[in-house]
Image (tube, rainbow, N blue to C red; front, side):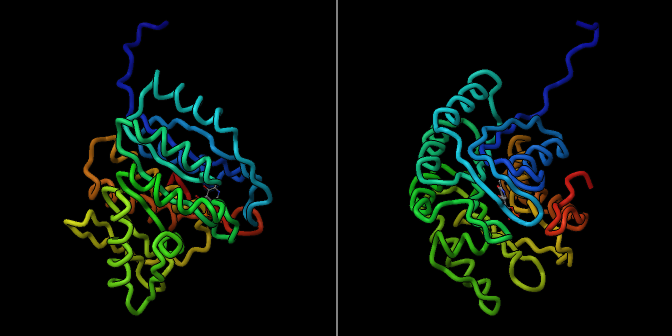
Length: 268
Ligand code: PLP
């Protein structure tokens, strides 16, 4: 013990997600984002991937008991002020995590991670129903990209009709029960436009496109940054606005690593 008075504890944020051995996405991106934005990050690991800048070479789910035990350890002692989910791999994992989150006393950001930028599936095809029916109802905010939107709602967002398509998809997603929907339009050409809505209000978030190929970990980073904002007590629109600003900077500073797609830079 020293004579130094204890520092005020930073906001506590829990990520429930998979590991990316390459350190660019997944739980590693989540924890780096939380550190960069001033939160204390904690992790419940759902799956381990063998992964690098070229793609995912292998993936293994953890036993469901191990997931429940990690969650109990963190929540029962340390407590959480916001939670975030990422790679959940298979239907049993989705249901197990949804059951844990149903009793959460803090906001939940659901990143419905489905396929990586390299085209590797991080969620089994037969887990999509469980995401829709079990996970979305417990979400404060769900943050799908356009591929995930198509899988979850059947709406294919086209560049020419993007606004109307995104509105229609958001309505369908809201019907599953999340409080807010953030549809990320970053995969469309031109300006990166996202739609945030709770059904009563609509926010269009625009940012210039950075022509940087090194964008590995973008989705994890955005969802984690939103969770930090919520843990700090911000409302959803302000938490999303700040998170988008952070991820835009991280994409602009993304760097080459390995022979493939490098990571966004969390420390920019
Ligand atoms: N690996 C893990 C463990 C992830 O959770 C994710 C995304 O959420 C990815 C890889 C994919 O990252 P990206 O699509 O940004 O390359």
